[in-house]
Image 1 (cartoon, rainbow, N blue to C red):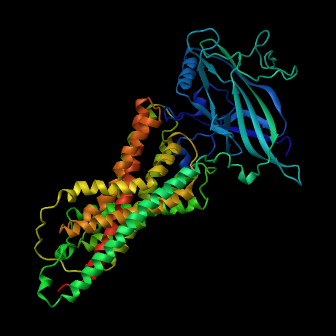
Image 2 (tube, rainbow, N blue to C red):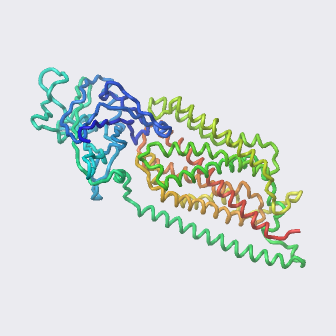
Image 3 (cartoon, rainbow, N blue to C red):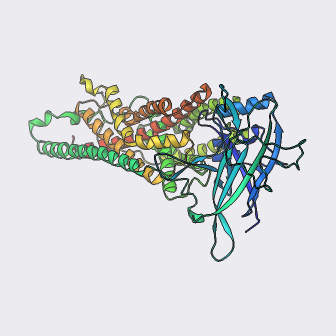
Length: 602
């Protein structure tokens, strides 16, 4: 209603140059009488959001001019702090009615307005005659609150929150007290600030007066679709292009798989089963020669069980998250929702991890199921947590608000030990109670010799080749995800992402099956680990692409920020490895069981 109080909240200061968020009041901005911290959810805390109240208070549909917030005098230390933040291109983020503050500006190449999140702290420029660059602070903010009016009642809802920042050296007569009128900006004389012609410099002993205007504009945008302007993606064609491009890869691979299945299996099996009585049965071809060794337990079979279990856990988390996101449950208006959902799902998917690991372990004739369970529960999260801990210590050393506080760290450890670990145990208990998976063919006592392999069947070569296609299927979408994480934009094309995920699964499965078949044909039966690594190697390409992105698209200069970037990308690549590797492994597992069960072997 008219005259209702609107309270603006302030969020963190962010910068794409350093990637280190800081809380708003770490700079000497105007403070309200009492700073109240809003409750943040788990995801928000991990992102470094610190949402607090601010001295900016509006009244609904009552425009204001030249409201003085406060007056500060800089000393050398404060001036230095402001200068550092201006140098690193920090932006102030504010929130009104859950909408983030944006600065509209025109891009020369397209007609529509583009929105940038947050207000820059200030700017560096040559002013007037001076040769050297000086620092100026944006101390006058002109807010525009857009509202949508309800037809029947007089109530209105906020649908937009924009600002134009100005730098203005305010003047007044006599000595300063809070009742003073400014001569530069006076509502009575209808003088307002519309440009930064006489900007406010940041130097020792400078006085800065913070002021703001508010105007209210009626808007056609309905409340339900108020997020659309924020989520406007200018380039849908690229996504379609990437999907089509990936579908081509999938079609090509599917063709190959179908050919292999039909030609070899059908022909080989029928021929083989007819020749049963004749002598030629002795001269078996390719993959049938190794039937006595193909299901031999691989070396390091325990570790394989652990990684397969982890991969299943990860796959479950990604799949459920993607379904929820594609249905619109995790929209960006729900800050930190995506993070929180993923962490909780990860913990609950421990059930499937334990189950998958134990089933495989029992098939390998393992007996110590508790040992394998513990390793499944601790290997992957342990490594990730260690990297995370080191990165967190670095952020903490920079006094950034992105550092995860002790309480949140405790919550994460509780999720892991209190929910995930017990569930892994439950899952693996159930999995181990089930009868073991039977092999379709008997394994010989004595392992057969593997003949000399051609150069292109060399394990390292074929593993590296296998990773290219799954990576090729996702890399365009990857560009958008990286941009949204590191350049602070919203990512909201979960429909596309879901399609890409499906394509990724199919590609991983098919490339592994094709390469596995070639491998068995050349009488090399060590397929267990190779199938996991073939599709898993796409994670290596993902990491290399992340490095390429870092040097071409980001202008990060601080060493700490660089370490952070590569640390987080390492975690992402490791997770991707586990995910794709498991998909490949299961595809190959199913394939070998299928082909060997359809052959009569005495």
